[in-house]
Length: 278
Image (cartoon, rainbow, N blue to C red; front, side, top):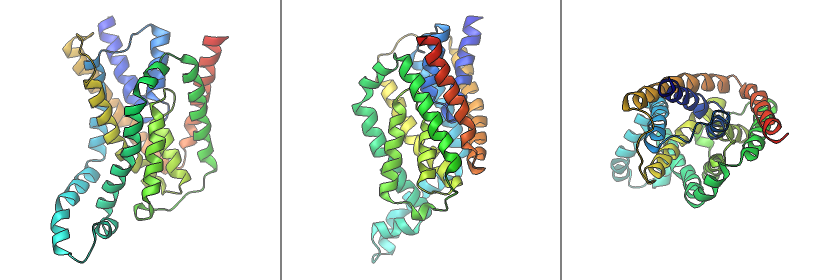
């Protein structure tokens, strides 16, 4: 029973919390503390993340395809339009502009992940930090209720904006800080169009997730805790649940109701502090 329920439960938690703005890392720490479940083996953890990554890729397949095609065609355009600079071509092409901003935004996220990785591993043992960060996440989600709807399109987004969003995304390595919640909230405060804020946030997450997987692969290998069929089943669960969760969140963002998740984060954060420290 343990080998059947636990991996599927972890798949559900991964799928839900990877995309909903409630912090997947924070919930993993709480789940471990409440149930005594140890941190999943590397192979299992990677497979769950691959499942949710596939959900992002499937939902944003057309965006990813168009960006790749635009990049492939770029050398030909540079040869054809000899009088135009690279930056001018990027500014004129939405797909190129989006790809360029994602690359720029990935820089601060990647640097924070590389240089602060060891410090963050230590933070995963601090349950009080998780509670406080969940409350902070909830407060910022609540603030989106008073943010007026912005109209900035991808053409209006600057390199400075992309660097800022990448920096904010980098803070999500702290357990309890939601990656999606932080980046979407920051994008809304930058007056980005709601639909663009959600879409850009998750496109920006793809290099981040891939980078995290590479770092996981660099860790010492160990025997899988669960059987290979259960690992595969849990990966499918994380994919299916993640796909549904991401669809729901994008709709919530479009409707300007991201603040709906605020009471949950504040409540779970507060309950964590009460249960473990009172």
